[in-house]
Length: 553
Image (cartoon, rainbow, N blue to C red; front, side, top):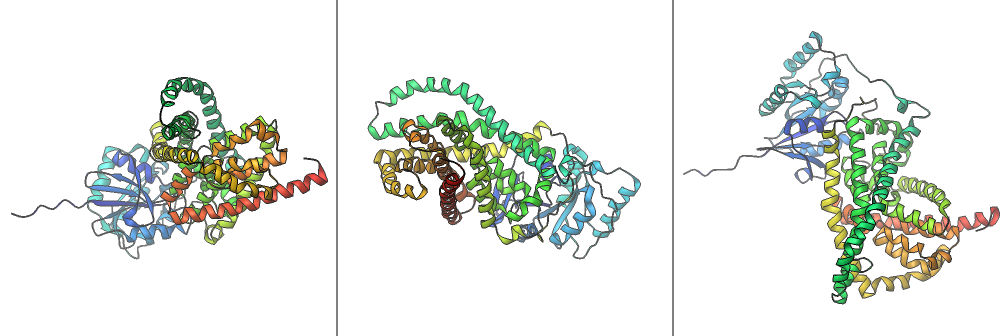
């Protein structure tokens, strides 16, 4: 009796530039949500959609010229039974084919052309497609990915079942059209980049404000709910009591997470989902790229850095969609300069408690300035190279985002936060409680206290600095009357800056290690600590020198 072998799981690998409609096309074909994984053991992180006997693998969109190498790595993992779905944009079909065909030469697959609704239907356009199919022996399917018909879906799936080899030296006749959308203020040479920055900051401001307003109402109610729990737990043995309701206990820290952080993350993810679904992210990317390239980032990377003002964890996870040459730089910028809702809220609280609310302006200016310098120092040469040009240097069509598309874009970030960040947060809370119960944190404070004089700070600020390295809300210890009374405005600014940037919080550090490696995470923390110490020394002593000559502290 012959042995039955399981059917081979085929992979359909999608190749294309940024904003060509790849994700929308796969979602329309499968009707399923994606999960992230490294393709075939490579270092290329892809969005994956599983089906019956077929796995659709959405490789990172090609944003820079250097990203072609990332695509080659993914393609090198293909096996004979795998298929390439090459996605080229109808509005720029000639240049997309010229750039992408060399990458897939010799592989088996088909070509899909989204945004066909932007091309006026005519006998000429249909003749161009037929001519290409005849010359290449490939199935070429023009579609509107946002409104995929049943016939188009069946046509693509049928073509995938009968793929042909991409010719090695095929140079398609030029279609001759190039369709550009109408320009907006984002393309204005003088004010475009300012508008782009404002559009990036707007979701962060609204999300943090709305979440804090919600927390102001919900937090008292939650505190009333947990009072009976606290009363019951207070009778537990000392260690268990500390883990439950100590300074870093699960009951103590839980409301802070679910009342303050979760709403911020959800709101910000929805905002970014709308930006992505509408095409606004790409417009912002192009507007900001010229001013960010010298520091090794793109406009798309800045979206992730700003996202960190909600929570660093989903911001780090979202860097999977960054360019291959700038992802590590982007993660470094998030870890250093993205003040999450905990950190930003605690910073505002400290300045307000000390009656020095005006310090938020120099704080943000110095944080921004030093983050740009730090990013420039850690960015690889390729990320900063003017030769590594954008391959989407053109205006993107803006679309009215559909609710299901917004949710598809935001769902991954929210799920990653709920399934990754929250469990890590709870584990760290338990570990921090045990260390606090053992007196380890106080011992560390005693060791570090003498070092505070290097920054023109009293020894009392050592404990908040240590605790802020574990959880950024540890900054709130600076708001204690006895501590704030010891500090001048410059010292408050120095202490808050040092505690905020010395290290990423532990949840962020563990997420970075999970996304990259422990070696990278430890190296990042070492570099960040050195940079933070140097920048703080400049702030402390440079600020003192400045005030000596131009004012008083």
